Image 1 (cartoon, helix red, strand yellow):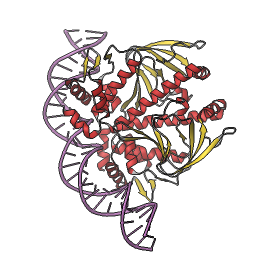
Image 2 (image 1 turned 30 degrees about the horizontal axis):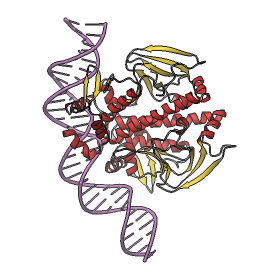
Image 3 (image 1 turned 90 degrees about the horizontal axis):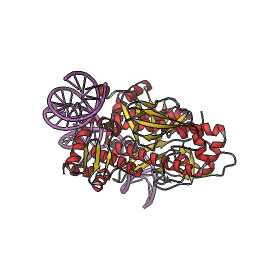
Image 4 (image 1 turned 180 degrees about the horizontal axis):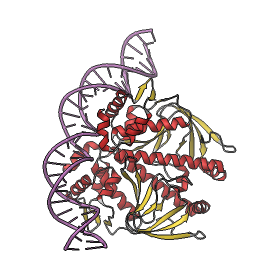
Length: 225
Length: 225
DNA sequence: CGAACCTTTGATCATACTCAAATGCTGTGG
DNA sequence: CCACAGCATTTGAGTATGATCAAAGGTTCG
């Protein structure tokens, strides 16, 4: 497993702690520093002029906070990043971090890997919001977190700690909280997953994949089952 | 106006011509080269496992083809890029291009600017698909193209050449072609825009902004007007 | 213990989809 | 230059997915 740098030799860094809902990076402001999430979850969100909030991504331990800054320089970030749970972040000077990444081969390919994963995840999510049913979006969402966490050894068997509220999930998938609740309940009743004590268990991973990739026309069939 | 590099000194480049629907970069394949779109339009698209195609972005003259490759290295692009009209592209070796960009201050800040614009546009689009009505999405879409083209002096007064089919617009905004047609017709009847001879004219820019940023609850009022 | 928030459930509603058919455009070949 | 084939657009009727609104439980935490 490739990990983002918690410590990089010869690079000054500072560690900060955050509580739930505390801002890490503010929308539309430039930032001179980039972070590495060491523990806890965070989320990247964009507030539209209409006032509605969209959650672009959930960030897990090991993820870079404001990864886009590497490519954007001093331009303002078009989204904010906020702690979802208690969290701690290791901050670096973006410029110095970037130079170091470029200089050192291993760091460089690791960072390209993270970038690549980030872009894949994000473009898939966007496509799902545009073209998939609520059930498929939720299946993909739950799986994505599962796979990402498993990759970091942050799962226990088929379960993982599920921290976001359904309201946040809704804002991420372009749904309403009420409908997220309904849809999750349906998945639970079908024995595909289980949520208890903040823990989500993936009971039927194969079926979840099926649902996430189903054509719209098959969705109805799947849902009523 | 900052322009992407058509020619960069001391950097080998080749120019290729494309016809409509010809692939420039193929989804899930790595690419060693990055392009600059010199004329014509292209679009970045992702095909889901369900078979549905989502259009992530439309690329206009001056845009970089596969801009993400600068940050992703040799990892496969999670989307493809295809010519929308007749188009020509100036190709560079990604690695060499990247190094040159880093070395030269002006090129560097120009590239960061393009990145920044690209990320802003994309994150806004994603949020709109998740949270805005069809009318708002279309208003934002039409405006975005207008602003981007105007910035490159590719508009004539309040009009610009509108090349995508409604089917492509639908795939970009997460709608169906039939509904795009209906919604555009409504906007035309309200005298906000006009489409004739492949030319889109923005008749009431202020109102378009209003519609793009309206809260969902105001949408109904706006629509029936 | 109470307040605030999150989740669940139900009833009702509307936005946007589906399916279908008619019409209009474009480019191609005879 | 016309006829045709293949798309793209338009329009309509009917429908369903997911939204809205509301209220009742559950949690969590101070």
